[in-house]
Structures are given as structure tokens and as C-alpha cells.
Image (cartoon, rainbow, N blue to C red; front, side, top):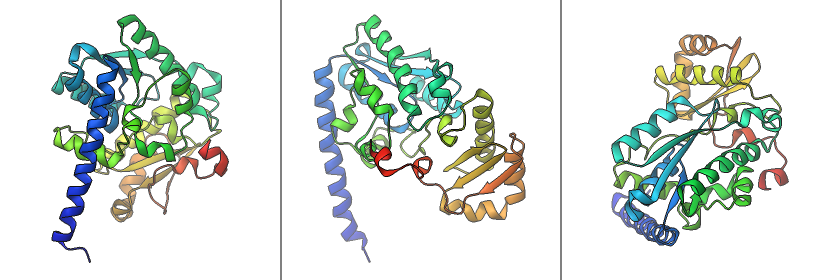
Length: 288
């Protein structure tokens, strides 16, 4: 059993390592001079935007949010709240990935087509504003995940300074809390299309159904979850600590999700876990 005294040196070592990696990030940003950041309002992009502002000055930073039907409204609200509270220069632009039939078909490399569209739009903004570098919020943990969007970023010269500095999600949460960022303990919130199994076409109607269902769960007090769209059925992945409560309140949970547009509501007994969408992919495809 780990005692509080034994745990303290471990915590101090983790903090020291995170702060060392933060210095590496600051050095990278110094070399940029100016930067446009793809800004979703998630833990990573919020942290990167604020550190960049503090390091380079707000005149040399622009956080840009791409708006589409796949972008969750709840995350949009967070993104705007942080911008207002911390004075981060911000711009919103529309993206048209749903108009690309390759994206809409929802293949396992769907994110490649999404990010190709996003970084094309943001790259144009950077050139128009005279910003030297375009950066995303990928962190060091992301290299272990299935991320075809990273290839699109690489092809367009997008930098990943958090990843390059070796900052993990745990580091970023710790340092975000130090900075007073409200996102420090925010659950991950990828795009709504990630709730659709590969091969099920991405449509605005399906995205809205997922969003309504997830808003309903949030209203019921659940925090870490996913609603997976399977045609007429919704499969709920809940954090293991919340599954008992969901079972106890199942009539209310089922009714709220069904009202979002689903005939059947299923509870995934394995619970919420990162990367569940990719579990059926061949190993070589997941690491490509």
C-alpha cells in the first residue's frame, strides 16, 4: 500500500517532469515567432493557446475554430468561454467536410478527409494573417492512437508542439490546473462523427441525434460517456463509476435517449473507454 509520504515524492517528480517539458514547449514557441492554433476548446488546444499567448504575446497568436455539423455545441460553448475569460485572440471559420463524399461515407480513415479540409482552411487564414506556423493540439499520448488525421496535418506542414515537447495528457491537465483553466479536468470530446461506427454514413441528422442524446445524459448528471449511433439503436458507453447509477435510473436514461430519436437504447457493459470505435480495426490499420 502506498502511503501519503511515499506518494508525495512521486507527485513532485511528475510535476517536475511536466514543468521541464513545459519549458521545452516554450522554447519551441519562441522559435515560431507567431502561430495559428487549431482551437477546439478541448483540454489540449486551450492549454496550447494560453501558453502561446503568454509566451509570444497576443498579437502573435490566433486561435481558430472550425465550425461544422460534427462540432459539438457543448464544446463550442467551452471554447468561447475560455476565449472571453483569458483574452485569447479567436476566429471562427466554416468547414465543409460533410460535402466531401469520401468523408460522408465514413471509412476508417474518415479523419484524414476531415483534417485535410480543416488544415486547408486554417492554412489560408494563416497566410492571410501573416502567421508563421500552424499548430494543432496533439499530445504525446496521441501517437499510440489510430489518428489518420495526423497524416493530413503532416502533409500540410502543421506542427504539434505539445507532442514535440513530450507533453502527455496528464502533464497538460496538471499544468492547466496550475494556470486556472476550467478545462483541466474536462472529459475528452472528439467530433460527433466519432460516435458513428465506420461504414455508417455521416449525415447531419445522425449527428444531431447523437448530440441530443448526449445533451440529455449530461442533463441527467452523467459526465464521462459516449452515445454510439447504430441506426435505430443507441449504444451507451458510460464510465464504470457511473454505470450503477445508470442502471438504477434506467427508465429515465432510456426515455431521455429514446426521445433524441432512437427506437432502442442499449447499455454497453464494458463501459466507456478511449478508442472504442477502433476496436474492430485490424492491428496494422490502427497503427498506420
